[in-house]
Length: 104
Image 1 (cartoon, rainbow, N blue to C red):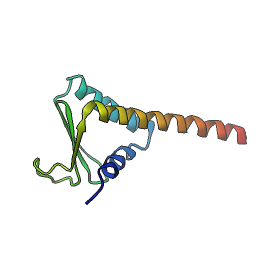
Image 2 (tube, one colour; image 1 turned 60 degrees about the vertical axis):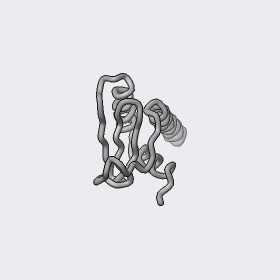
Image 3 (cartoon, rainbow, N blue to C red; image 1 turned 180 degrees about the vertical axis):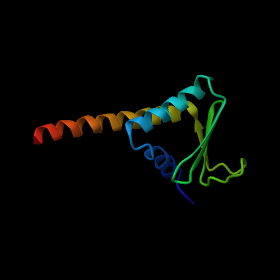
Image 4 (cartoon, helix red, strand yellow; image 1 turned 120 degrees about the vertical axis):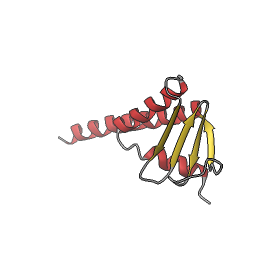
């Protein structure tokens, strides 16, 4: 069995750029705000995320049965995780630019 944190980490880390992370955050925020009713998302990792109402459901297969959810968490928690990942990418990008400038 795949660990819960491993699936979540794998899904989030596929947003490798600030733009990808921002898109993820914006999608989650739209569901949290009630602007979008449902989001289905599958990435290269073959993990599927289904967000509805207040809950994000994580499936470990892109072809899934709604009754075989591997893990679920509140959308607001998923939003916090995605925002922290985006902040990490932004901080890492800033540090990389500072280091590159110092090496010039």
